[in-house]
Length: 257
Image (cartoon, rainbow, N blue to C red):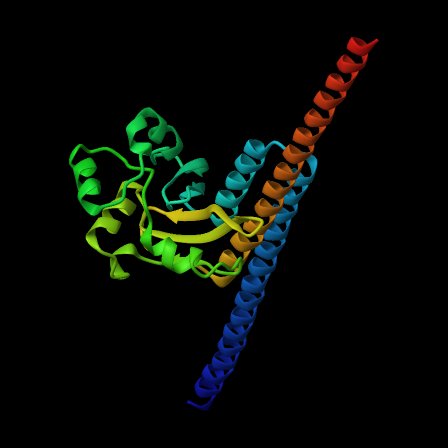
């Protein structure tokens, strides 16, 4: 009947309004989440910067950085990796979620694993012994980061099994319990000092540009911290040399008198 059709039309209009309101609310909530995330990122960046300004204890700075970044990125591991001239290296700091191996501790428990590994044959020998190698030569880092020599470079992998890596490299990443990662370089002046890396262990992950940009900003601040520490060490060395020279001069004068 006519009143039934009219009632259904009115209900349809109300449903359309309700759906539009729901979609608008969803957009507002999504925008609110993005704004809150941006605020949290700014806070984390400010906290790391403040830590650098307040302390010249590089170990404390590294610890704060990894903890803040892991919580902010909601990832399984954030680590700082120091490179040697031959692109081997070791983890010097990390923050990990419960249930994953602490690579910093493990690499020191097995001392010989810190030897430079230069061939896949050597790598496979270590893997047969079910040991974790945290000192490796990373050819992909060497070609993707170091050779470019730019602080704005990054290396992002959403799934190590879909990237076309050779078996040797995949085995290294498996020993790190890593499935996806985002890596940015840390420089000390013009020299590539190491890496700041975020690891997703429990599955693939599509890293957002904002996340990688945040890692890059933090890595730049770590570069500043390393420069500050190096400068302080130079001043301390010069001060010691001046003091020693003054002591020698005083001793010489006393001898002549």
